Image 1 (cartoon, rainbow, N blue to C red):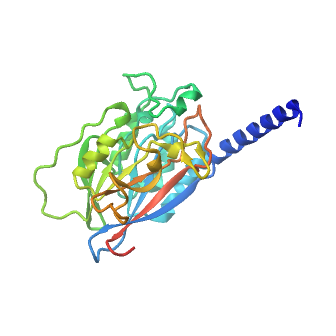
Image 2 (image 1 turned 90 degrees about the horizontal axis):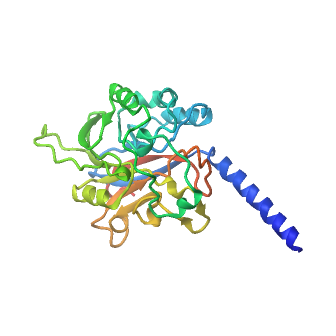
Image 3 (image 1 turned 180 degrees about the horizontal axis):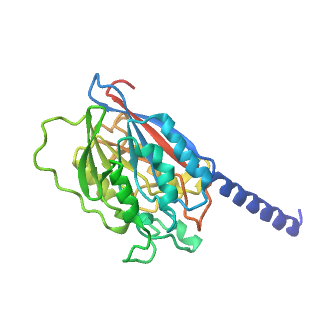
Length: 308
């Protein structure tokens, strides 16, 4: 093969790969996992985990997909942030979430709920924690989004604890503001309870930084739920993610794992906490590509210990 033909072939392959990577951003997937943490005999509790929508006006396919998730009839919805990617995205977001807002829910915020996305040098993607320049004044209408979620009855877990009643069962929730922006302040234990034990104790964070995972593990969470990583977004088949955009290891970039050790159902994981990291359903509008890492939401079925 001549050098010219080789260069032409590589160029065609690159264009084809880029076209597919853009197409993959629209290939939405539903993941299903089971987590055995409930007391023996307790009936299943199904939690829909939605994260990193990065919504912009006009993303009708994504909006309709999010709306369709209500057909799963989850017992509880957890939104781990980065919902917005445009100043005018609040109304489309609330339309997308409308069927889910009728169900019990809770949320934390991510950096792209506060700050609009900006163009970044693609080479920065390979950095382990690719933070942008520090910005101090949010330019997205996050207050209106938060107000709508609160008015729908969803628990705001911004550096606070709360409880949600799920069909007569008490779910205790502990959340932090976005650790990627260093806004996290782990909430102190709430003094006094109503005497009703929690069926499930969840830690909720946007970005799964190790310091926060350690705090939630020490706080005796049954499971921790996070987003932010996009699952690596650009992955290598049979290898996985290249980065996590935080200090979490690549092996936990998405899916169900244990923290700080192996999964609790694996050898050596007896002292670990279950950790679920969502690959999320969106991308920055300046990097609208995914490869070997489809956009997703996850239906997590919390089941009784010993059931699986």
